[in-house]
Image (tube, rainbow, N blue to C red; front, side, top):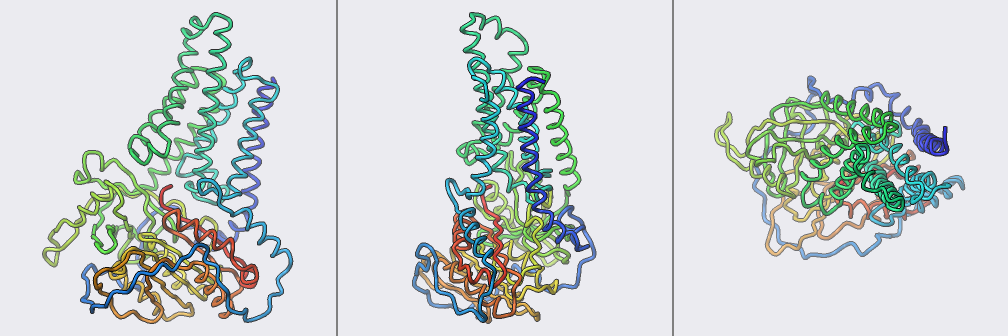
Length: 569
């Protein structure tokens, strides 16, 4: 075994060893979750079962008449960091010094740096880059030994394919969804693109000096290498943020075609790539087999929610198999979606608790061409049992569930805070009823919902009212904040105790400290779960608030766990 083989072999072992370290670190949480028998059947495959007796009102698309309310003046309630004074602790804090040390460590590791990456993510990427650069340049010059760079990128083929799969074996090992590891997939892909170009340029330089470049370029194995290089360069260009935002279909198509061609070209270019390509094929094929098993083709009911700019998708034939916070990938099989709309697949967070008679519910925000076409379909009038009504039935393909809170068990915490924006309310609507119905030890739940217009509360008011009025030991509060100035009077119903609506952006720091204090006052000491679902800006703001939260409060309540579900990944 030569130096190149030794270096690449040990680099792959080191990377796999790092994955094992994170796997072992997640074992306590995995045990805590899987020790519950119900967790074995939840979060894996969608299915239909006999629903539980209804405990929440069914959605009613008919809008009740609401009394007029005079407009409130617009006030921006968020002035940078929401740092506020906390109420006195109900008992003295005698937490160990290690808790303070850990809080300071978490303060540093969770700090957001370039492009919304946290310090711990940056450190992990730096470790990966150092490993690749070390094995690429140790006792090697890319201009005199370009073979090393090609060998190194070949060894990364299994990792980049494994990180790209929806049923991610690495994610299963460390206990996170595939979307949480997507930044590593992009990193490994970029390193492969750079390495492939260094490999090619090095040989062009070497052959040019030797005067045999034309004869070398005429050889079959070199031509196959150029094909593989072109595929990687296409992948690199089409994976840029600009291309993804302007033409997502081009991004997907280029990925599928180029990734397949690349595997064949790599094998014909260099036979030593065959084991790595075989491993990548195993990951790719298994992923698609599992995705086929997870896919359901059924009929869904579309209903528009104009106040929210959302299409409500109700799938009655699927009512079980997911955990709160998970999402599915939706494809609408209708020509009304446009020439290529039927071929597009989009992820949406499930917006209700499992095992209900209404089935699975999704809330699809109108943000682009595809979701705009879906909203237009939902506004089409159709005829049902009660005559003409808004909405229509459509065939859909539902794949999932994916993502979610991983091995975290929300019911193990004493308190919960859900900071959501717009259609991100779907996360709270699935998690909160589950926590209430399961009769858990959660004592306080706060929902912080940011919307543009106060009328967004109208269609969901019955559901939210039912949550705050549940006859349980859990106290639920709903705080709605609207950020758009109101120039005319708007309508809203009498809000029950527990639901408030205010203008401006929420002061997240004050609301979190209040939730922690209320949890401590209720006797909770098992920590507070903080879930965020919305735009990246909201997730960054909440992460900053959690990171800067009062160490005394965090220690007294048992710690704060932050989970993010952001739009745009």
